[in-house]
View 1 (cartoon, rainbow, N blue to C red):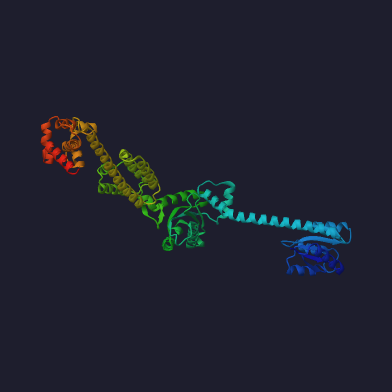
View 2: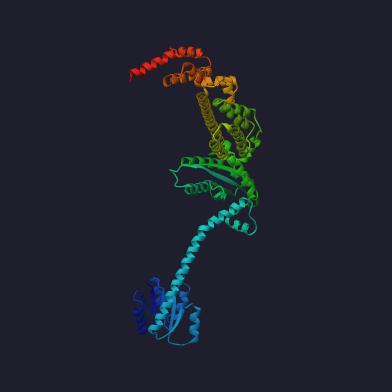
Length: 536
């Protein structure tokens, strides 16, 4: 279990202690030495846990040995053996951290008690050591997170006092500098296990590309973990030199080949980057946002973007009203053309703020959806609104936003058309059902049109388009069909049947019946009776 060393110049004492300890602790490995020098040799070859040492020995006595052991990184548990009750020996031994001071001879009970005490101390020391190691591991794991948090606070302009002093210790000597942002736009899952591996690869490649001369420090944003912040200690000329930019472009191309697509944005240069990091960071963040218009896998700089950016979004276009008409008319081709016009008009006036542009497009599309709310099913209307707001607000690129709007309008037009067709079908079915139930009454085109809230002219056209015949023809055929059924199933007189199915004039009923079926009502009844009798 433990390794124990007995140091005593008297063989009888050494062997006696070794035998006693062997009986009390058979699992101990016991070593023996006759003086301090020999003990040090044994300890150099074996990791000793416990040392029992006599005080008075030749060459190197027990106190000299204890002084040597006290300098060890992990000194063993020390027990002093002496045949004298001398205060100065005990005082010296205690100052050197001994666990016990035992007087010879040592009996079994005293030795048992001493070994138990030593074992408790070793266990306690081991527990404390393990706790210290665990605390150190946690500290090593937490420290990078804390440092990243500190630097996030720094570029956000939320750091001062003691925290600023801590920050300076983390940074290389730095005065003038620039904040550079690198965003991961996409990575191939086949090339990277997860986003953590992709981010570590990105950080390594950026630091290698810039090289030690840049004196850079990198960390990821806490609120947007896909963006790497790199603070570069260099002059504006050096950062934006053609050589540095060419290296960055080569890095972007190489990383894309390796399965990682990134976009780089440079902030403004500052002569006091420690104090003014926030401004450089905000400039880089704004430049990075313009990848929405300009695309990914490029280097962006606000200095190059601002001259082209009006920052304004026009309040309303004539094409917006035309777009309403196109959707109302289910004209997809016209709707797509108008979307292209609206998008391109804005770009032709200069690049607005990406967020303002998204809001502008969202306003147009939401207005469209609201306008056609009544011709959509409620669940679809709510889902379309939700999807539209989410997709437009988070659309990363201009081209993707335009494609989404075009696809959404196409879907919306199809859905509106289907809903309209469904409503038309329901209206015509209801209308036909009404005729089926009220055919015997005085029905007129005008009265039925009014019943279903149509003007007479539109209803006449609508009815014929959906049934293939005019209203009066459909009503006549319904009455004649019902008349045939009554002729087959009842013994009612012809004039009675005529009145039952809505004819006021029996002669007129006879005439139109013969025109439709080739025989008079009376002849039709005789034929059906003869057929019935023949089949009996």
